[in-house]
Amino acid sequence: MSDYDFTEVDRLASQMASLNIVPAVRQVVSKGSLQIKNQIQRDFAGSRHFRSVREISYDLSTSGDVVESVIGPHVENEGFGSLVGIAIYGGSRGGGGTVPDPLIALRAEEPALLEAMGDVVEKVLDE
Image (cartoon, rainbow, N blue to C red; front, top):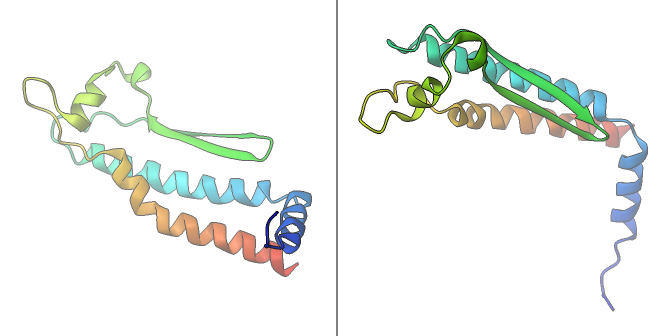
């Protein structure tokens, strides 16, 4: 048997579950995704050999209380296929690797995303 009392934690979890914060979270994820998308576009535009990759987008989806975003180039539409991987990581025989890894854009956006999520939670707790 535990010596800890989780009554307040359980109450907070119940309150959070009863509130519909998904729209606010979706807005935060959408804004962060747009920032990341824009950075990836700038990264490709700055590459001498891969600047023609222009169509970068994000797909936002919500399922229950989960909000997620997939961000990246539409390689099928532009005929670049696996060249996007070479643009970012380089080829087995050298060359490429002139476009920063998209994870760098994600990590750069992380502090703003976490702050915005904290604001959403704070607003919910104040209500």
